[in-house]
Length: 133
Image 1 (cartoon, helix red, strand yellow):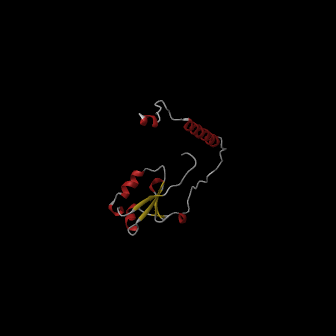
Image 2 (cartoon, rainbow, N blue to C red):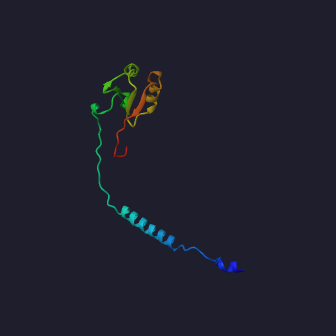
Image 3 (cartoon, rainbow, N blue to C red):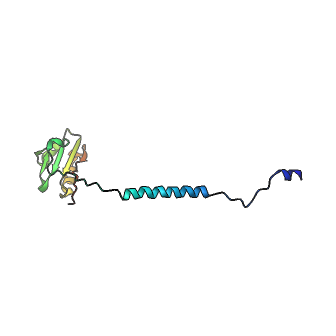
């Protein structure tokens, strides 16, 4: 009987205090709405990006195959026939491609599917435009 008197009674109905958790959540919500409110009300900066219609060939990566309108093909700025591309690119390991956005890619894919182009790593060169097509 003396042992039972030394051990304190456990309170079965004891609950943990959640007030600190609620305070943390409320503070996080306040910070969230402060930050998002500032971002939503930030003034827009008017930026007009330049657009290049014709690029100087010396600024483009080499070798570059430019596929223009009406199936005009040029390699590094020099017009070339599709049959001569395999010989001209025999020593190259990378081929940069610049194709007009309105051209069909099917002809280009058929040309590059030939075995003489299998060793080439193809990289697309793009022109970013600010205005819709």
